[in-house]
Length: 118
Image 1 (tube, one colour):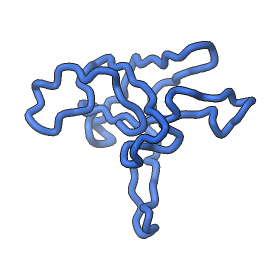
Image 2 (cartoon, one colour):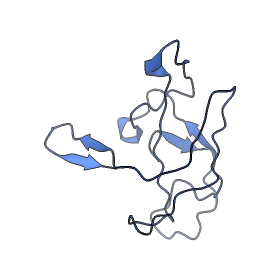
Image 3 (spheres, one colour):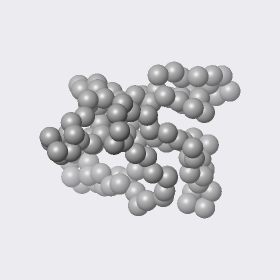
Image 4 (cartoon, one colour):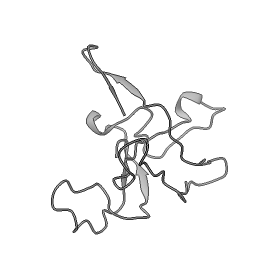
């Protein structure tokens, strides 16, 4: 995960090496706090769960995190999208649409010589 963390790791005993961040089928994901190290961040993350409304400040009305599902498949033909996930937030106005495959997000390295993608 990038830009967020789960509240519990769950039972990861079946993994010998490369233990995942979380092994639960129904994890609770929370936003990270401001000041999180850059290698754990992604754009628009780490606001400690505090978001302004779109009318107050559009630049601070969004938050994001990146989640990789280990058993979801590794190619465009074998990938299985997560289903039945819920976004729980206080108050109305927060929505979560169905998962979909999109073009990879591209990132330019700090030396501006290489492009990586997620």
